[in-house]
Length: 176
Image (cartoon, rainbow, N blue to C red; front, side, top):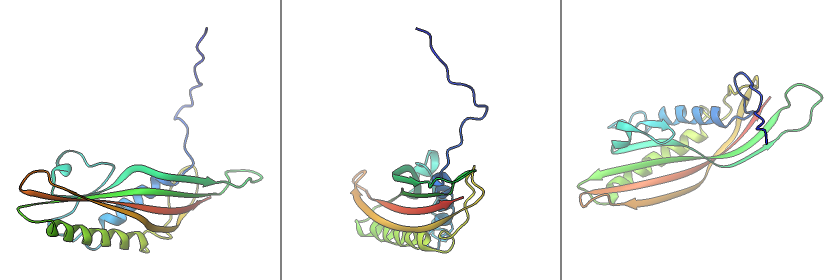
């Protein structure tokens, strides 16, 4: 039996979605949020799981590469690229580790970070913002909210206490 290879497309296909542009925008907005940008010590914000030196810090936030739910609605049009409504849920994670303390210290830091992330998601710097997401010419973030959260306690060793928080952010976009 002969193998059939797919045709070469030059640069590959471009996925018609706002997910990736929205994740980048969310990372930028969260990194600049009050309570994160001005934290002491500084809290780094990554896109995808942090690697290297960042993952060894006591406190860090990342916009997960995991999309938990994803729907697209594309009405039929008479030509060109049709407008598209999308709804998806992006996972935002944070970890706070403190040495020589009880659970209350990292929990207090986590509480401030969660509040800062929620404020960033609801801010004008995220909602209503224009997205650059090829092949569309323009798009906007129409709606966003934190819909779920989960918190876990960890004890990496006898001296350290750790809090891990996961927030699920629902986003609705429109692209045209």
